[in-house]
Image (tube, rainbow, N blue to C red; front, top):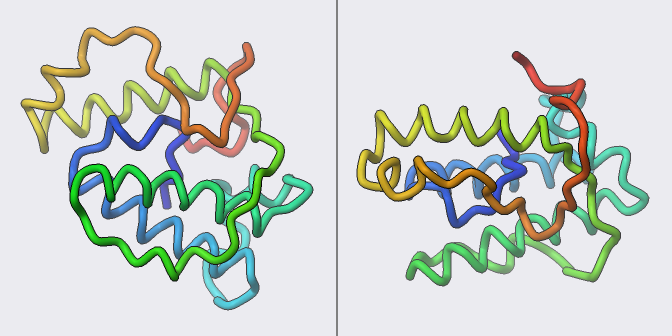
Length: 142
């Protein structure tokens, strides 16, 4: 499971669809609707949020907005209520790690997007997240 800290605009089609599916799985986990992935490290930041279910809905709403902007038809009804919630902190180290990880994927899967983004030094984070200085997250598998 990869719930990107990066803004979904950087993902290729395959990555955006995967993020949508994995976000919906995360939502099911946070709602107690699945047996698997209950302790997946990618969910730690949502579990730590004061309103984890609303946070994942807000996260998914941004993924949905990106999909709509691209002309995809993701089912908005799968998200649930979307409210303004406190942002989730993401460290600069985590952003750098994810950016390098995504660039490696794009180099193989989507060379045109790789060329478009490879020189970008400071990618934006997902709109639900706010950056602060720090290392790679403790939940990240290196």
